[in-house]
Length: 393
Image (cartoon, rainbow, N blue to C red; front, side):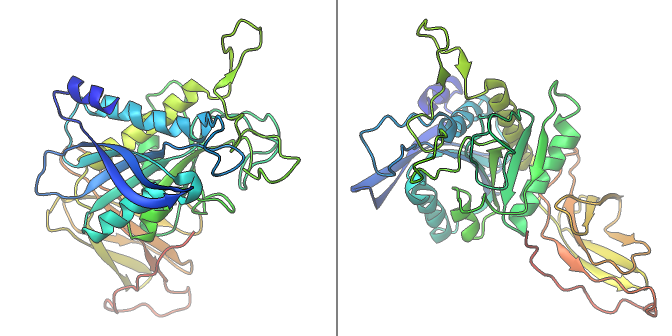
């Protein structure tokens, strides 16, 4: 399909295989299926990755003879990647976008690990990784890996979970959610709830975003609110579809040999695809993320933004204990901003730049700021920059 899209896009989309050697279930050579959409800005080397794993499995992880349909896990994510390659290849962006269907995820994240290792060893700059794994199902199983759905046959077609580690990966998840709320939600007929999860993945589980995060790249995972199973196929009482040959597209309920009851909800999958496309587009068009420092001045915090590009249009985000921002401030025509009357509650600050087209950068790393207490004496002059701590979920 990538080759077909390349021909339709006058060669803008360039298909390729990423081959690597790894012993997976007795086979030694494997290939991720990829396509690259080169950016127009050749001075900017960073690129965005949209990925989903191509492989699927049955009850036994290395059973190569079974019918591993894998429609929810992870035909849904693969379809999302293919569709975005088709749509986005009609356009050219400032930054390069890589579309990647990885292999060997079910046996140990091997395809993603191979590409992430290659990127690190060759000093490739990855701006963001959007991993899509189980993004089409809406039905809860008897079991599901926590935190997940409430019980058997519960339906949720309007929520998607955003998993990420702390620091820049969590900031990427916040970027996706805020851009959706501000740019897309007012326009769509069926709004989605994007829930930023505290953990990097479900309890005891993993995904292809993790090898990228382990090598310092901002990476996150999209996953359905409801999963049909916790993948514990060794339990004799396990009856759910995930990681079984029963992970099929749907069933024929009236005997006419045509599927008429679907386990993958196409409308839900389409909504998740649009969310990914929006996030990738804005990341591929957005300006450089500025840096900043914060200085305590009495009961206020003075924010100084360092931006060699001088966009002179910035957003400042503050957050206390939740995963979402508490307040957002806009600064125009200046690089200095004062957060007034901050007393007693530690909080986190991050910033973004906004270009002349109104496109926002990815969000900076957060600074953890300890404001003065109500009884402390105000500082007559800036004392020292705040210290930077990694934000963890």
